[in-house]
Image 1 (cartoon, helix red, strand yellow):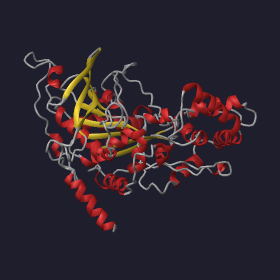
Image 2 (tube, helix red, strand yellow):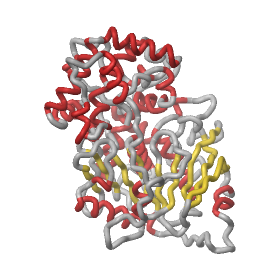
Image 3 (cartoon, helix red, strand yellow):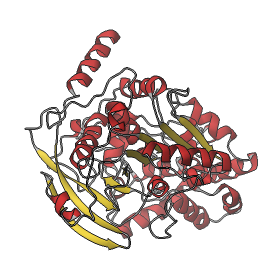
Image 4 (tube, helix red, strand yellow):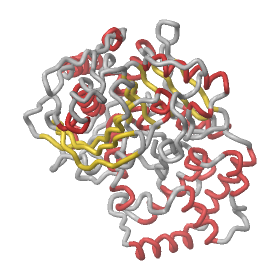
Length: 487
């Protein structure tokens, strides 16, 4: 039976290597070279008066339309829609509009292709690799995140291959304009997205820079997360945050009453999860994970209230500040429905034991199915992440992963193929959490990572530093805070 499933999966992937435009993707399960990206087309400079304005060139692409243009010194910034098939295997069966943004610098510069794996910001911003190579940036909204969602939504078409093919079609559409080398990047779920894109379309990009990207290969085996939480930070800090969790459970009555009053005041409901009590427990059980994911290790432990002496209000406020009581309400879940659907169908999700809560927990750690409306069917496909992991381990070339020392998502990480011919790297930023990046690496690792990113992009700097000066507004490095247990 397993052999039959593997054969069927291989056939599906083979069929899927033809894009909606009828172009072959070049995705293979074997070793792949990057010969296709080393030969760059000769694209004229946009400053040439005979070349149309960059906006005209973008809008000349079939299916591309302008939402708005926003000014930013030294750049042109466009918010655009691009028409995509709902199903890339059957492009005649409906389309939807997918948002993307273009931070245009110069067609003679490399391009960084970014996705958060969630929605897209409509304000100008520059990801770290874009600053490092001083390039253009294309940012794509992940399919099914509002407003980039078909109506009606066929949820069976939300999978990593369809999303990778969205990226592939946008790349093929823009490559004639931005002809220099491209790098794909993303943070957390965005880093996962960049990895999946590389797995299916390994000839599109000259390199991948993935930040804090989880790799849940076996959704039924999460002991690595338990081991991480058992040893992260100091014992004193671990004990303090666990004590707050336990005390919150002990005071379930008065804290739930506060949550009920808050929900009534804000109009929050609990239909998807089922009851206020389940929402209460889900938030409290996320506290330890979210604490380590986002809190600054150097100062956060001292800010944990003393569980034994804290008032009900102090406990309630602390849990709200770290996790957010609204996170599992219907309204809090609505914007993240595509993530929970994917977590319950392909990506997997951590299931952590938390034995210090065992006698107080009524429901245990709740799976993604609990956070998706029941009318949306979900079936988990365990082979999908195993396929990606196997491909990365054996075939990855010019792929970089950056993790944070204190980030629980890094407990299960990608481990790309090693060796000079693969030119792939894994770095860990000391003292960093889910906001880890190249700038927070040790000096030697930072120089090496910067040099490799620039080399992949076809640019270089003898200093081993970013080619563009830091811009306080454009280069904000705040990690996107996804409240509760979301990458």
